[in-house]
Length: 102
Image 1: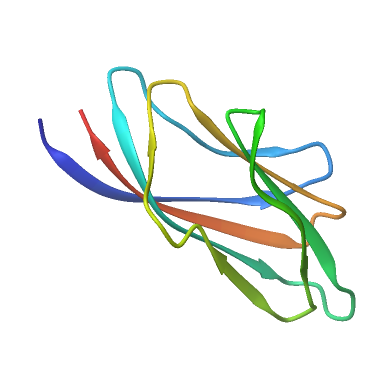
Image 2: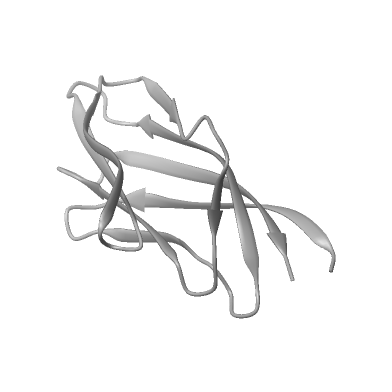
């Protein structure tokens, strides 16, 4: 079973953006996650849901021009688990680092 390090990225939206879905027959270690507010003047809030029913982050404010690093500990995800990012606007870039084991 090889271990492969990967990164996934997306832009959080009010309707939710799936940043990552664990492939079938795969176990994933979520290693870290960051969000950057690319707006020039307004603060934004971020929610991140694990598998659509568990918050990893809720109403976290990110000032304009700032970055928030979260998911400091490792988290195990299994086949078809998802990470979805929501924002009050589409000004938050999100990146997730993982290690996939197949």
